[in-house]
Image 1: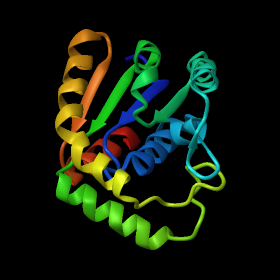
Image 2 (image 1 turned 90 degrees about the vertical axis):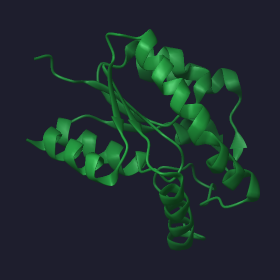
Image 3 (image 1 turned 180 degrees about the vertical axis):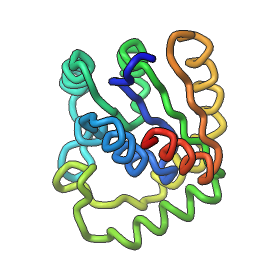
Image 4 (image 1 turned 135 degrees about the horizontal axis):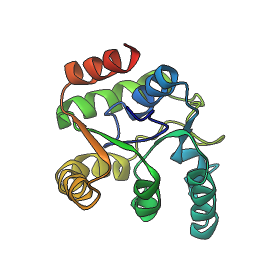
Length: 171
């Protein structure tokens, strides 16, 4: 069996990408990278597209990584290098509960997976994105799985499946 060295973790906000990425990285002994750290500057200002894409390209050239985040503008570069794509597809109500819970827990504090000066968001535009993302993203990830047959595609659609996946990696 080929040792897994490059894993993408995707899914809507509140689905558990950061947590699962850290667990995968620990289980496989890989470094973890959060695309939000590359995509944003302080105050939730998007980094220039060329800089962001350059940094993602440099990251993809590394031999081993777990990368979490969606950022569709760099998807083909990431999918082309990944061995495994983990799509966390939990129910929307659970994602919303988690988004609100995370906001409440982290309000006014800096999270480790966000750039300095980007505090936990809960503006209407963010909630609107969370509400609109799942249906369109499900079709997108199914298309990616079809278009990249060498990529191991893992869809986790319940908290129980996420837990079982982590246990499998640790075994």
